Amino acid sequence: MPQGQRALRIVWLYPDLLSTYGDRGNLLILSRRASMRGIPVECFEVRSDQPIPVDGDIYLLGGGEDGPQALAAQRLMTDGGLYRAVERGAVVLAICAGYQLLGHSFFAKGQQYRGLGLLDLHSDRGPSRAVGELAGAVDPALGLPMLSGFENHGGRTHLGQGVRPLAQVSVGVGNDGATEGAWLGRIVGTYSHGPALSRNPALADLLLRWAIGADALPPLDDSWPELLRGERLAAVGAA
Ligand code: GLN
Image (cartoon, rainbow, N blue to C red; front, side):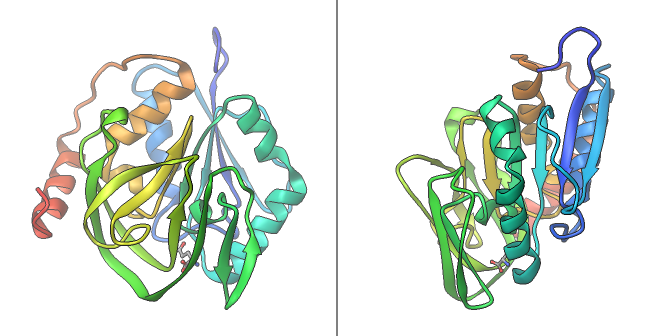
């Protein structure tokens, strides 16, 4: 948690391997929404051949194709920095491939790979690729409006007892056609691309609040993101 003048540190992990469908936007959105509240921000983009800083406040992992996903998991485990950051209480937002690799295991290119085990879940392959709009009511414990996103994945994710679903699916597939994403403590995983935070500004603010230890943040003019959300949710009958 930043104290005094210390800037909020947002770390985007492995943009060289995990970055699809505009996942970089999540970094930009968090940074912008913090700056507009007068919170100083420092952004770090850490490639997979660089050491992971352990003093970040928010870590972002994006989506990726099978090969880069397997390589990213291996390098994240070898580095170990993300484990230490989570032990320190850092916030993590992981999208799609990044979400799958936080579990115990996942499938890529027909092979099972070990995941980081930070979330109690595992992923296998579904009967077909899940591609399209994704929407669902978010776990009431998080106090967020409906999740809206775009998904594109071959994997299906099965949650263990140690995590809670992020949302109940009403449109799309998410984890398994019933639930979508998972969360535990300050770690959130989701299949929502888009990027996720452009369609879900309240989720962005939740991550910021966790990171700075605030119960609330001054409101922003969210007319544009709300227009986008409204349009996408209405298009799939989830508004
Ligand atoms: N490779 C993974 C899958 O197909 C994740 C895909 C993604 O991140 N979009 O399930």
